[in-house]
Image (tube, rainbow, N blue to C red; front, side):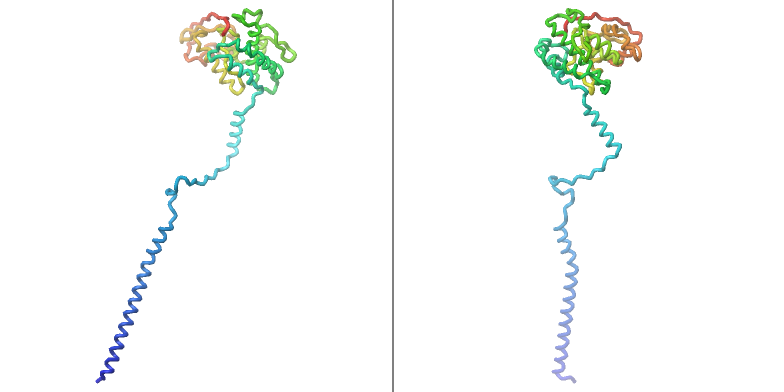
Length: 303
């Protein structure tokens, strides 16, 4: 039989063995718990430091500009063309005439000849500048048309105020044959400009742009004609003249026209009949068989 002392020693060893085993198991479990919870701790840190979504960025923070692709050669050429069209310089600057018209002509075409007479020095300055800068071969057709239309109208005003006051341009002796203005080495009159220059440029709409200071004439526009705007200006002047019932009465089957269409009939038939020309600018389509007559012409001053 074992002694009591030996028995106690064995029990003590068992106790320590159990204690060591318990500590070991507890330590392992604790390690597993730490490993198991570590990802959760990492996740919490990631949430705190996470970069906000782009949609959550305040609108006050500007976005970086997107890079632009270089223009193709064709696009560059097209841009150059557009810019050139917008900035094409006039061969002659009609700014003095423009200001005179704005000051002395109403939207309806009524002319303040007293006002023109009070600004006669400016008018003469403009006419002198026309004389010193006549068209040359480098000018475009539109530049030449604008120059001679404005010249004709300015000289007509000059003729009137030289003889003002008067009731009609016909109160002046041979008004269209007076050679009062020297251009280059030639003394010109209004007939020279209209028949020898403007009409030979094959633009029938000049007849609605040049004026004769009379009620039945096309109205004097309160803006200068310019090469850059000439097409629009001539079209508008023609449309306005045809729509003015004091000068033309138009219906589908009957037309009562200004005598301008009688005097210059050939000019309006260059590309078809007179009716064809009228139908380009009239709101009413005129029949080819429409009855035609001409209205009386008033030479009273258009003031």
